[in-house]
Length: 134
Image (cartoon, rainbow, N blue to C red; front, side, top):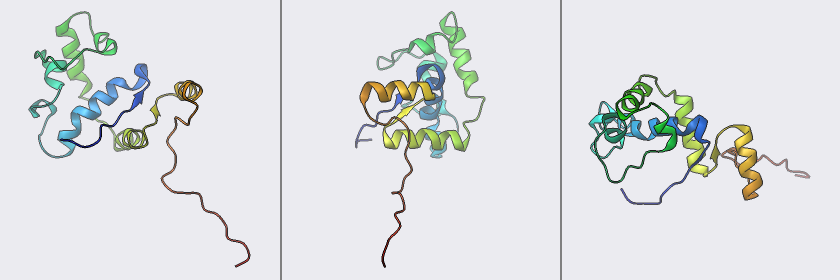
């Protein structure tokens, strides 16, 4: 792939598994495959099927999906029964492109306090300034 690595700070409790779905459905949205499991380079195989992958480290939020690997894998596959709406996909893309903090208002306020910078998505255009005296 190449290019610049993009980073998205995510409110774990609310958005992490949604972001997993967003990432693993990218090849499906790009019409490269029909299902996330068909994409060879996806972490879906480790998360949903239990395939060993030395690059995948299970996040605590993933581990909370079930008491054992089989239950977690089943719960993970079930997450993909719900469609990611176009609005949710657009929201994640906007936060990713602007490298903002995706999460609740409280989470964003915490990030802003820690970093001293805006954590929310800003409009893509500059504000309109009225011209005077023309």
